[in-house]
Image 1: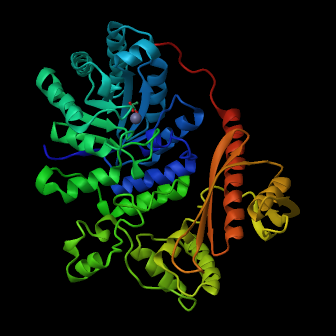
Image 2 (image 1 turned 90 degrees about the vertical axis):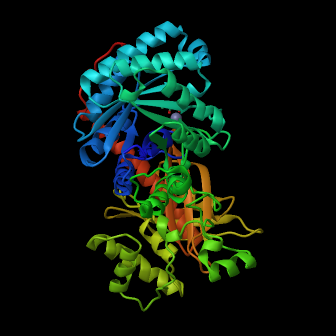
Image 3 (image 1 turned 135 degrees about the vertical axis):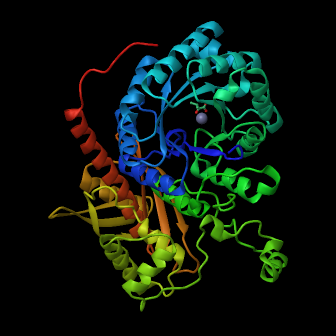
Length: 521
Ligand code: KIV
Ligand code: ZN
């Protein structure tokens, strides 16, 4: 079908490598399953050579996520390509994605190679990748600033060596739409074997043009679009999946393309990613922002009440934004809670429901009306996908503009209990100081944010933190109607992740095989 656009999701590779977005193995697996449910066509799971952690997550995702093509990134080097294949080999549908820069700026300053040398290296890399895996993607890094004749030359060579997807990245987000679209038109016109490969776009958002450039690419022949959930990625991010998919869907009359995405899963994927990384989307973000479907102006509200079409070009339901205003309260039972979660798209197992119900009853004691957003905050509260080493039993903090803030914290670890106190610049800092004294693992707070999930003074507050432990950053999250409680548990969530990572990498080091293939293509 020539009107079908293939969605290549790189949230777990280009997205994850950006500051503040790192995820551990379990988090990546959870996100990968969500992307599978969203029905992305290709899922780039990581860059296996980059670290043992990246390798392991690509390997696990390749083993567990079976209905989607799983891609692993590799520079155009033998070591990278073999390592990528090692991680991907058990996938149902593996893809090696190899790349090399093609702009003169990159050749001169980064690679310090001639154009000829890069052509040869690209040919060798694609040939090797093809000998291992039938599905090979070749990317010309910084294609957006590359000489077009040279780009045509390298693309032709890559296709001759067996690349079945040719990806054209605007690596630094420099292009404007007609310029980027033109690259695809020229490739289609000038590269004699171009019909043997699928063209792909990969745009960064430095000038806020990533989605517009991706659409221009599609209009000029690209049939794969690389993008990320919430547009996360290097610097200003990548093209946002939800914006591209919804632009194609809402404006099908104009653009004439379809994707295989289950658009009703978009909000869930966006929300999960924010909760895993602590990277919240801005309120006015297209499609998934908190205000994306909120009509504030009287004239708009009046119009929407008369006919939604007046000011609404897509429905919140079409992207899975919860709109039901059924409010649960302290008299609602487990059954009502489980039904409400089902309506929100979550089929909770017994254990998950037990935990959600316990948190729900605690919350309902403090808060009269519980909204859908509260329920989502409950299930994402410090997402327990790693074992909890330390658990908060008690926190008491005092502060004020005339007092020295003090906190006392009691934690449990297995059967043991620990209590300690600290002072700080405010009650949150004092609480973190007390936790550090107990765990013996001092953290440096890089980022702290709190926001109200719902309305009213009794609203649930979600706290996100990024904490540096021993030079590595971990995110943590918790929700509560008490800010100090949420702050303490968010910090402990990050502590537990740091401990878990330390323990699992010690385990991995002990069992990891020795000796990897070496050498350059
Ligand atoms: O932006 C870029 O050029 C990339 C490539 C590695 C595909 O991410
Ligand atoms: Zn990129």
